[in-house]
Amino acid sequence: MTKRDTILVVGATGNVGRHVVSQLRVPVRALARDPAAARLPAGVEVVRGDLTDPDSFAAALTGVGAVFLLWPSYSVEGAAPVVDAIAAHASRVVYLSARQAAEGPDSVWGGVEQLIERSGLGWTFLRCGGFATNTVGWAEQIRAGGVVRAPFADAARSLIHEADIAAVAVAALTGDGHDKQAYELTGPEVVTQAEQARLIGEAIGRPVRFAEQPVAEARAEMLAGGADPVFVDQALSYWARLVHEPESVTNTVAEVTGRPARTFRQWARDHAADFRTSPDH
Ligand SMILES: NC(=O)c1ccc[n+]([C@@H]2O[C@H](COP(=O)([O-])OP(=O)(O)OC[C@H]3O[C@@H](n4cnc5c(N)ncnc54)[C@H](OP(=O)(O)O)[C@@H]3O)[C@@H](O)[C@H]2O)c1
Image (cartoon, rainbow, N blue to C red; front, side):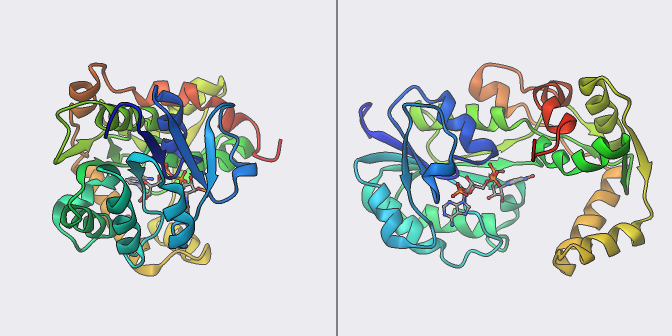
């Protein structure tokens, strides 16, 4: 990779990828399945491409030296040709992974990491904990009545701001010393779900409170919404554990970027609009 090579950002229209695109100060190409709907800053090259269509993806890789990659599926199936295509064009990849990958190749994130390690590419893995932006899932309830009804008010999480994940990605894409590094990324502190709701209220200037929902009711709602039963049970037992065993906090964002990771309070301020207005307005 030379300084003039283009960086391809996969997932450029997503939570993290938008920040990667805006933070990069080198030629950047954004991948989108529908460029007309991408809403990326003027001047960014946006190319049509679909990870499930190897030809369209290979075309997007011309002249690319490094790739920011996410794998938008709960199955590793179909990832091998994508990694092979990257290895045929570029020299390094920064992969948006998850903490679960540390447990081995059984999860989708561990499986994709294994493909990348075997590809001959230079790599950096961003093993992220939960994203703060997952709480946007509460927006409808907050707009409707200022009450988040969900289980495990005291589950304590070290949620991360997507802009911090992007900052680490940009460092790894453009700087030295990040090859073969698996970075475990979290927010700077542990915040309970009840406190997350309160901080969102603080950001929007209206009280928001957390109301404990019975686990059986939450489970039924998730299943009715079409969630996979195995995922639902895993998620519920994980959140239950966090009431007594808070998630750990790493200092990796600060170590890599030289700036402390953003707090959940900061995240809520940055996203106040998501909780004030409906997506249709
Ligand atoms: N949420 C969490 O707590 C968490 C924690 C750890 C890791 N992760 C991982 O983070 C990733 C999600 O990141 P995010 O939240 O930034 O993304 P996101 O907001 O969910 O957006 C998904 C992105 O993937 C792109 N995409 C989807 N299917 C595609 C396809 N077939 N071909 C090309 N592009 C496709 C979409 O682009 P277009 O629709 O424009 O084509 C969009 O940019 C997932 O892999 C997830 O496993 C999430």
